[in-house]
Length: 470
Ligand code: C2O
Ligand code: CU
Image 1: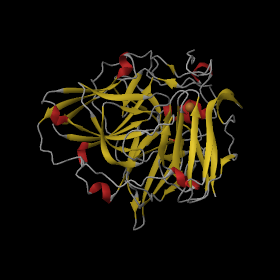
Image 2 (image 1 turned 90 degrees about the horizontal axis):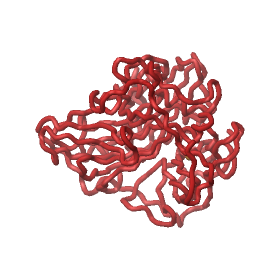
Image 3 (image 1 turned 120 degrees about the vertical axis):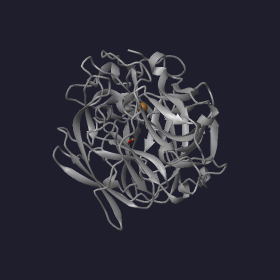
């Protein structure tokens, strides 16, 4: 197994490990990019939109000519996209048609605790429950996914993830690309057996990924919206792409080839204060970036690849755009996108330290926060409603740290202010042996929430903790 070495890493700390497909894989860019279907509310009234969603198994074609058994919301992977509005209540009734328990979490949602998908709030097979989202939050690219304690890795791997887009008037007043030129892209890696199945290297009936995979599971096939290395025909115009890293453990650095900068306009928590031009966009598991790509820089007939600078061989390829035809384009990226309040770390009522490292757990070797394996109901922090706090995270190997409820801003990375305009995040990548300070304000709801590593194998191997807003 791969282990960490050098530069301050503990010897023997397991790293993510690549699974190799036995199935015949397609040539890249031979499938069309699928767009997830858009969920239609079953009913709406003056106060809310109501959706009915079934989590069930389905056999779908991911690799040409092969059937893959998935667990999918609505029987699809990704699940249907839920289109919601800021401030408008959205109620999702999830019917568990699987033969295993499930929990759903709206990632990035500002959600009351009883609807937040706490890891032991299980929906048993054949049971259902309503998730009631007030959505008193700004426009942003959110996603929903399984969050069952100890089993999130396998259940997301098998397909339980979808987009949840929140829109608002502020964003709609901007001339950003919209409609068919606003495209969600869920990027994730998987591996396939010869028969097309996507086995997860876990314990057969137990939690987490076993043995050499406890560092994380990587697949050798890169899927975008559930299709291997797809292709999208685009007009010679600006497009907005909502990039989501839905992988269990793979981090990407996305760049265009031939190279041109990518304009980032949004982050986990919605629009940035101002656009930023980047050579590459780095996304750890769970993170999102809304970007604008201007295809008018390319000729009709031009081909542009989206590549992963952190991958090798086939894992360096993600998808391809083919500039198909000329088109009229009224869109623009304004120099000011939004007013982003900057939280002042000096206003913090408390500063807390959290150390993310490998350690021993109730599952054996695993991952711990401040030396402790996850135990539901054991609180590592009790912030007061309304308070600003600084949380300081340190790592052994890389850990994408995600907070439920509280969006935050990064104050420093190894003591340095991060580059770029102010932005809201809900997931931040700690790289190897790094210290990251964030500042947040706990607003909206009192109650019990989790913080965890979004490397889903680490999460399942106990790298999670409860905090309670009091
Ligand atoms: Cu996207 Cu608690 O997770
Ligand atoms: Cu981790």
